[in-house]
Length: 309
Image (cartoon, rainbow, N blue to C red):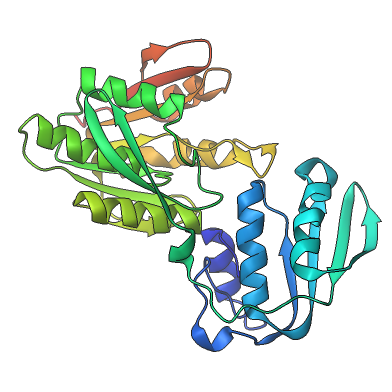
């Protein structure tokens, strides 16, 4: 079971693996495993979620194994682990990574992802919205400053299109806001489709869209492979971390490919930390770049794909 759409696709094509995407196991998987291995996530609350799922999947007396790096917080996670597994033992340690095992875990007979779902009321540029949340989703329980800056530019300089793709959509904040903004302004409805690589984000974005009545579909995807056709606008607040490590490869790949998914004259609008080297990549792959907003932390970039002829 993985929360990463790209890894899920790889596993689904390997006959030696039975891959499952996200935290929604089939009922028949309850109590089916002799050993459950949990890789330590970044967020403490997500560790609790993974441990609960592991208890649901494990047979009585199953071995529950937790693996993580010291800098990821394995010491704190072991305290959580011991609460549900009783006595736990460190079975290996190398290269700043530890492996712990417990065998007195009490199984769970019920596991519902909706029990972990939360809602946050947000407001930006006069638009109120409700956003779904799950442990591990980006900016849980708050509107991050980068997205706020991006939304403010959308209020000041609207896209002027009726169809948008939100890449790395997270919990669906941008799509929900655009829907509310168009309603508040009395504009015609806008369709906002979204993609994200993380299972929690996909689940939350669908819930946020459902509650707000957003017209759009959310896709689980690692990159733009599932995106069909050309878009008059693509918008993004892309991630730059994998776990606790800085990783810009996903956004670099996105910028190299996005022009092929933009209509001629279509707009890319993207917010990123100001220190990240995206301006040159946008100019290289799409065209001249404009900075719509900037402070010491974030920059909102805008670029248009050149029109044919």
